[in-house]
Image 1 (tube, helix red, strand yellow):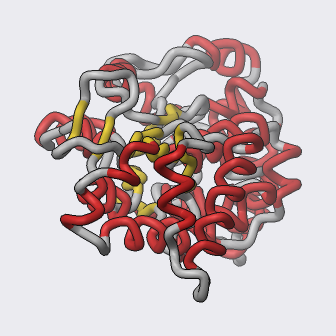
Image 2 (cartoon, one colour):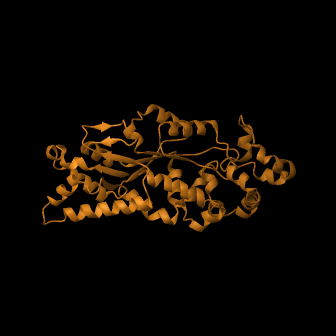
Image 3 (spheres, rainbow, N blue to C red):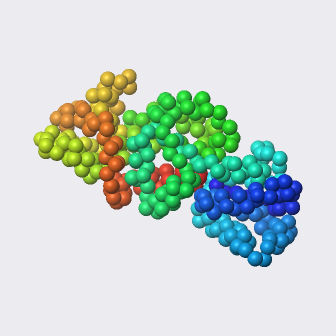
Amino acid sequence: MRLIIEAPLFASAQLQRDPFALPTLWQLCLDRTCHYISVDPPDAVEFREWLNGLPAQGRERERIEFLLEEGVQRQARDASTTVIRIADVPDVDWSGKVPRFSLGTANALLREPLSVVIEGVHDETFLKASVPFIYRERFETWSRSRCFKLEHRGGIQNLRHVLAKENLTPELCLRLFVMLDSDARKRGEPSSDSRRLANTCAHHGLPHHQLERRAIENYIPEPALKHWLGQQHARDFDEKWLAKLHAFRSLSEEQRHHYNMKHGLKKDRKSAEGVADIFEPLIAQQPDKAALLEEGFSSIVARAFHERIEENAFTEDGQRPELMRLFETMLRAA
């Protein structure tokens, strides 16, 4: 989160009323490096006089200057999308484009980690397995330091229910990120439930990412899928599963991205929407391959993410652009 301290705060009565509030703010930013600070304006008399009044001995001035320099660099290379101003206000002022917090309310907000709302434990494993190398250190460090926490809230309908039930105050919306399946049967056509959830997020200004592929299972790279199936079905892999895997591999990119990995074409056929038209050529022209894909790979196929998957497997599967957007959006919201 980007924190902009308005310079008049340094000459305000807030510092006298709570002399520990400002040191607490500095320490929170040192402990949770997802937050960074600037002073507006940086050369203001109030700030310079306050800074010059610090004890000559000790490291407080050195720490503050370090934080301010780090803030300049962060803003230049990786600006946060969550911004608040810390000002001489009694509580929180929401009247402007950027909310203005008192020191006390700002510190309370900063103590709260970003809640990354996902459907379940397999979504968590997917995130940990697929984070690109460029974001991996930050993802792991910020996770350990409680800059964010992963919260399992169930499927899309349950997520919608949770968001509808929760009191989505402006403060809470500053500490939420939502990742949701698209449940799309074909490219660019999320399910109605997924669209409604994405619209709810947009309405409340919640940062979110709606997966482009149908579900997290559609992000299992084929080598990882083969490895997992081989472990689960060591005795009959060649006889029962290899042909299915070859049939899946022969699908078009759009078909692979929107195939029902858990339950196959059979489950889709029984649904109200039926089998998506992108599979009609397969069913009509290659019925033998279609028959192999009637059943999915397993209701627990997402456990393939529990195995170590090399980053180049995600890259070769064409996932890198979307994964970069997903993690950039999530981490910049923190």
